[in-house]
Length: 448
Ligand SMILES: Cc1ncc(COP(=O)(O)O)c(C=O)c1O
Image (cartoon, rainbow, N blue to C red; front, side, top):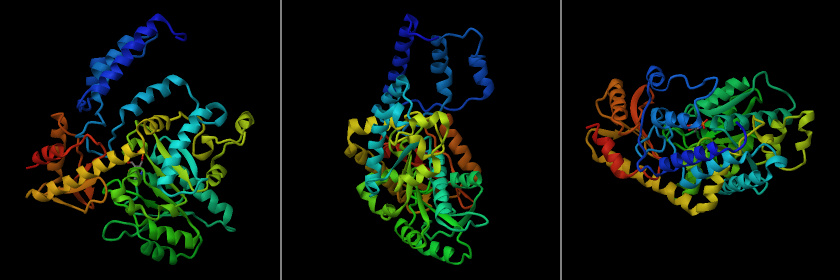
C-alpha cells in the first residue's frame, strides 16, 4: 500500500484526468440524490478484504457516486449557501492533499501557517482590525462561532469577579442555527433581542434588552453580518457601541456575508465591525474556496489562545512561542485548510475577489428587478446582499415543494423553499459569479 508503484503512476494519471475533466465541464451537471437501494444496486459492497483496486473505485465514483451528489458550483444551484471555488483553489486543494502538511503547529507546518496567516491578514484588514489581530482557519462556521464564543466566555469568567448562575449569550431571532447549537454545547442560555423592521439586531434594541438585567451574566453579543435566510446585516455600529459601553464581547457571524467586506458597493453596511472582538467568514461560501474552511479572527488573539491551548507532556515540543493554529479554536490536529484560499488569493490578487463578489451582487440586484417586473412573484423583504427572498403569489407550501423537486429532477436548477415566519417562500442565494441574469429569468419562468 505504501511506496509509489507503477500502478500508482497509472492511477495518478487517471485521477488527475478525472479532476481536470470535472473542472473543465461548463456547465457542470447538476446531478441529484439517489436512494440507498439505487446506490447499493449500482455499486454493491466496496469494502472487501482484498480491495477492489483504485481503478475500479474511481470508476464507481465517476459513474455512480459523484452523480448522486448535487454540484454545489452549478450556476443554477441557488439553495442554502452554495459555493463556487476558483480553478486555482480547487487545483491547490489537490496539492494540499498530496503534501501531507500538518497545519496545527508552527513547528510542523510553519510554511503553511505563514501563508494561511497572510490570507487571514487580508480579511482582518478588510474589517479594520489592528495589526496584532489573528486567528485560524477551522472546519466551518459552526465550529468558528463555537470557538469564538468559548473564548468570549473564558474572557468574561477571567475578568469578572463573580460567576453568574447561568451565562447568557445575546443575539437576534435570525441568528444562524449554529448559535443555538453552540449554546447547547456550552450549556449557556440565549437572550433573543427583538429585531427592527428590516430584521436587524440594533444597538437600540440591544441596549433595552441589556438594561433590564439584574445580573452581570451576558458574556457575548452575537451580531450577524449577513443572515443566512435573508442576507440582512445587523446594526454593527450600534451594537459595537453598546458592547464597548457594557464591556461585553462582540462576535460577528459573517460566515456568509462578511465576504462582502471586499465589495465597495456594500462595504458601508458593515461599518462598526472594526469594533468587534472576533468575527468569522467562510471562504467556502462567498470567497470561492472549496469545502471546508472558516476564517476565525480575534481582535486580541491572546484571548483565543488563553481559552483554547491544550496542554500535555507530549505537546510541550510545540510550545515554542510561535503561532500555533491549534491554540485558537476547538481542535488540535488540522489540515492546512486555508491554503487553497491563500493560493487563489495570491494567484489572482484581491481585486479579482472584489470584482467577482460585485458580479454576484449585480446579478442579485437584477434578480430583484426581474421579480418586480413579473406579475406572479413579489419580493418578501428588501435585498441587502446576494440573498433574494420572494413569493409566488397564490402558491401553497406543496406548490413550492413540487416546483423545487421538479427543477431538480429535470437537472435544471436546485432552489429549495424557505420560511418567512410561518409562510413558505422562495429564496435565491447567489454566490457564483457564473450565475447570470438568464439563469434567474429561466428559473422564474418555471413559476409562471
Ligand atoms: C450566518 C451563518 N453562520 C453560520 C453558518 C454555519 O456554517 P457552516 O455550515 O460552515 O458550519 C452558516 C451556514 O450557512 C451561516 O450562513
